Image 1 (tube, rainbow, N blue to C red):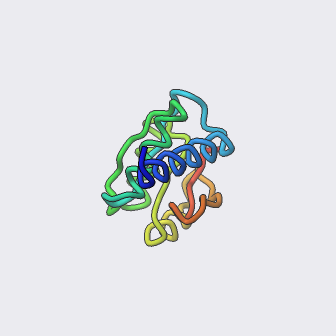
Image 2: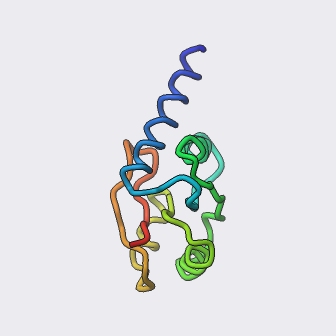
Length: 113
């Protein structure tokens, strides 16, 4: 493998490890609310390495829509960009709570209790 591939593999492994620390178990759903690009690919690949089920979510959705999707799908985490996490953090709907993200790959995640 070349340097970019090694870096991508290391990032995906770090995300998989972070998901495990967040309590994501194999076959649990993780909503990925990131724009297209390397961060999305890294998050998707990391979720797959954790044997979780990555689910792409439009980053333009409202907080209420994200909460409804998370509840309906039983998603364990919502990974979101810095631009979106502040709106999501204001959710009054349960069972989502704010947790810290990993190495700037995403700013934060919303975790079900």
